[in-house]
Length: 101
Image 1: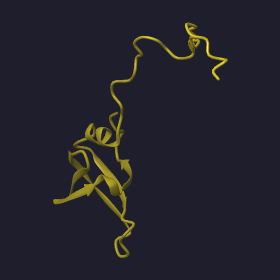
Image 2: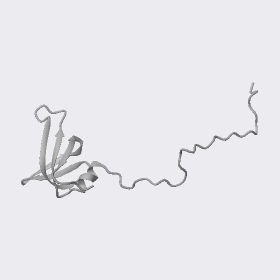
Image 3: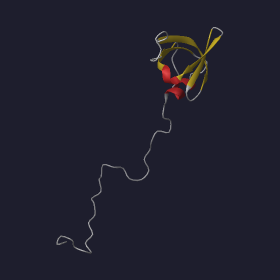
Image 4: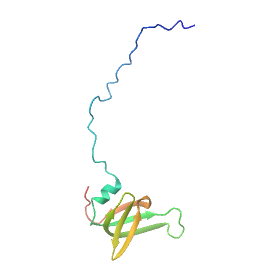
């Protein structure tokens, strides 16, 4: 029944030389959007947001100084009006000066 079975034989898989062995240097600073915006606190930026479930407020644009950045929000000051922008709705950001990165 098991005519092809040979006890005691050991087969090894050849090593794939394309995979690095040992320590691999990986970037420590993965740049996520919130980290990028956080590095630009105090700068003026324009935020373009889309609200897909809203008919009246489909697309909105907010411009102001970045005051605070959390894991899922950005707080900006637009001429004395503070806006809490949820990151999930941010399409893109325009910086008025060269951004820090």
